[in-house]
Length: 368
Image (cartoon, rainbow, N blue to C red; front, side, top):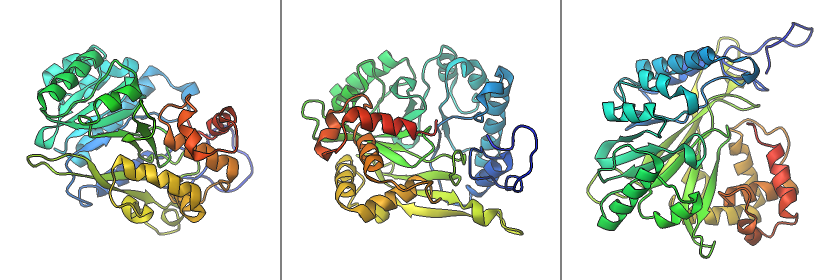
């Protein structure tokens, strides 16, 4: 990471609000983001996808991890007030999480969290938000209905089955293979929300019988951190509202960034600005899985549209390098398959490279 090690001759230090390069974000930038949120929109809930500690993992202790958790939790509570916050994190931090999140989760949920099981919460209009680490680390799915409660993955799976049989509401959780779950519960799972990759992207899931019919899309929101060479960013989702018969599907989303070049100029103040709105930017008639599937095919044939996606992928900071033939094949393949080891979903894209080459190329480009 930058700003580490002995001082040496060179350009000036990191900018006050953050720096492009292998840098994480100063705490006061995170606080500036949270401070402006209450006046930005009347939000219904916040999803916190985790990845709290900095990337200097070689010198972190448990106490460092706990301090990061408590600090960020305190900032969220201070600036978001009574807004429901649905957090996701992992492993040995469960006890610390339960202590930090006791104001947000009921006693039964806190007890289950201490057992190391994924937490869930009931949101507005019978909507359920459930974090499932078995579904990919810092992932969230937006669900609604049914008295599902909070339980281990297998219990959540059975609750989904019961809710589906009764036609009663929605739920999340599975002990069966991930991709199979989206097909089985495509009428039950409303959406998936992820973080972790730092960039702005999405992944598709298809009917396992044909691998042609899109059944779900995983929205991967951009990170607040700048690591690597990125503007700080966050995502706002517009979801079908809380009314009888609501689908609670994602209708649209918009991404906001802090342009560090502008923010770090002398005398400037941080200004969080909308980078784009998904349906407007990509010409989508709606935000259903079929629309995102068609968008990938448009990326393949429309180079100008694809390069716009490549720019937004990096949160509005000019990419380090252009995305040409091999890069484009790898990225489109990654968007089309939620199963990174399965080449079958890439075949309709007519990639010029063998799948192992595409897979190896894309792994080199991941930020984490």
